[in-house]
Amino acid sequence: EQGFGGFALVVSGPEDVTLSEIAAYNGAVLETLEDLDGLVNVDSSIGNFAGAAEQSQNGNGETTYIRIDGVPAIQYTGELETSDTIGLTNTALVDVQEAIDDLSDANPDLNPNIVVQKGFESEEQEEGLLQILISIGLAALLVYGILAITFNHLIHPITIMVSLLLSIVGAAVALTVTGRVLGLSSMIGLLMLIGIVVTNAVVLLDRVQQNRREKDMNTYDALVEAGAVRLRPILMTAISTMMGVLPLALGFTEGAIIAAELGTVVFGGLVSSTFLTLLVVPVVYSLFDSAQQFVYGLIGRGKAKQTAA
Image 1 (cartoon, rainbow, N blue to C red):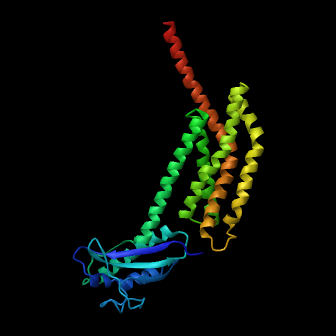
Image 2: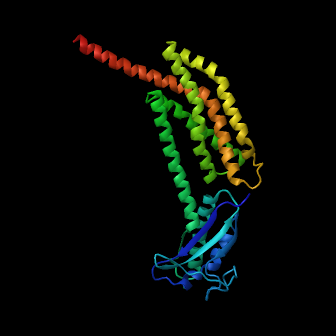
């Protein structure tokens, strides 16, 4: 796989720690990081710092002095050759901390209060993932608001939003089958799906509403007629979109790791949402409509009783 994203860990200690005390763990940390699959060209910020020259394996003869909140620290960087950047970073955190603890237990003279945390590059990846999650939530709310205004109804847009959940099923299956992970590029694909998959449900339910409003059909007949009439345009638009992202999902574009994962999510989400929308959305619409009619019936009966009294 191609490299994607940056990697950085920071090793530090309490306020009274010295750089030499941290550097005593340098060799163990470097060895642990170099043994991780998907991480290459591991480097340390201390270089050949006095007291750690024998343990440092980068041998570049340079030292970069780092302080975090006034405390000395050593930063370890590397190049990622995996799409599971966040997963690898979390694994590195656990493995490095275990290596530090083991070395501290075996050598009582070493400072035992050394801890490892994420560096700037790794924190940026997590912040980017969080921002995408927030964007997905905001996009879903915006789509619901637009649908509520368009349909002039608060319940039917919820029925349409069910198609978003159906797309997640296909995206998860596609990632599992291809062995790809839910990373930043995959999340971008989920964000794109919000604007794509709802169109099928909108096309279907708009016809249902039209049948009930203009032809005075009951719910069942309106759903059956809408499914028969709108099946062809729904399949045409969905299949053409799927064929458009298929080369990306198959990875024909050399070196485009973002395109491969993004295409996989979009393709899988479209497959599941298209076919399940034709089955699940009509059922959900029917259930919501029955519940709505039941509530209206209760309200109507209550008003009738008050009028009779």
